[in-house]
Length: 158
Image (tube, rainbow, N blue to C red; front, side, top):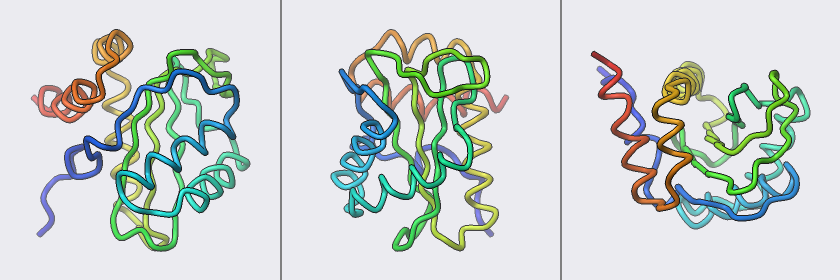
């Protein structure tokens, strides 16, 4: 019944941002919380707390300058995404020890089950595209970043 998940379903244009200075993961999660609040209306503090809680289980830096923080959160109806490009890379205890400058966070309902995993896999596949990451790093305009992200999977699907 459900059609294939794609990033246009997860990521609103208002949830894409370039952040100039973030000095810690905690500050990044606060920033993500604020973006989620303005884009989706969820409580910023709850988002920040959920992301920090998940991060305490193990770093979500996946290497190549990319982090995929994610959490399940009460009050979330469907999987939501937030993308942030950091002007100043941040140490994220990533597997390859490289600082992170591209952050794609996901929030899922507490009972999301397979949808959460599908979304994580989709985002992970998208962010593994080296050409896309190069383009994302070369751009500051949130609307352009959103377009690049939401159109990339369609190109890759071939």
